[in-house]
Image (tube, rainbow, N blue to C red; front, side, top):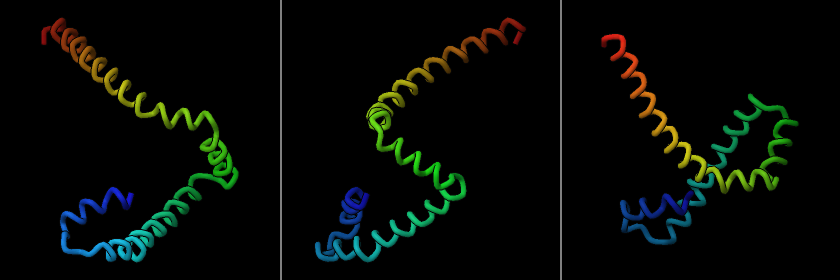
Length: 103
């Protein structure tokens, strides 16, 4: 994520020497990631048992999750397209029904 953010920052702050970007990562970014991690651990503890988390880790390391990770963008695109077509069709049917009732 840091590598995705720094080009934007570098455009905003073109005079910053390269050595400072390394320091920025170490002194700010890495500490913030650690803080976010602590907050997320707390959130997971609120909703999952230790055993649940162990099972989730097992799933994430499984071939099924690897397949899910590669297929999710494809599924999302196809589902969005399907939802749009369905929504347009539904609106036509709802409108026809209302027209049939005199509205």
